[in-house]
Image (tube, rainbow, N blue to C red; front, side):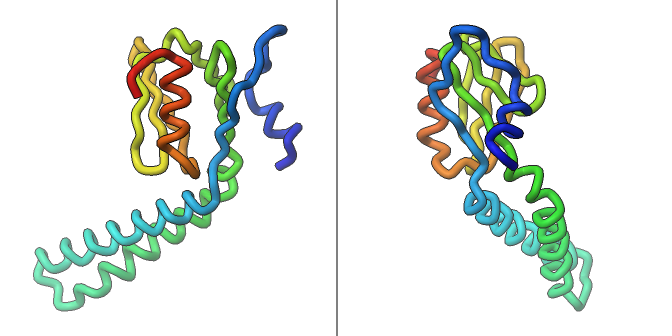
Length: 147
């Protein structure tokens, strides 16, 4: 996807609004997260089959891996297009997402993602970031909240 197409998927900037930081989904973080999900799904599948007394416990690993691999390949195109922009006033995300910095109540990290929670309780997730800690700190600092 070109820069112009990405920019068109974000809400428009106000006349004197400036972009301070852009956060894009990272391919390495995407595949690393899916590798961890696959390991967890494989372990869970094997544990469930063992608890049920199934003599073919190894099939839980195959099923868990297949499920996460299918999910990863199916969603990768859309997930890796994701872009967020931090401006001097708002956090802009895909589609119509625009959160005023003054509305942000909490910013926290979850794996390679940053969760932004507004004072009214709305939640937004910036996923598959290459440096989650830096993004979390930057957004929290801009919003004036603890990160």
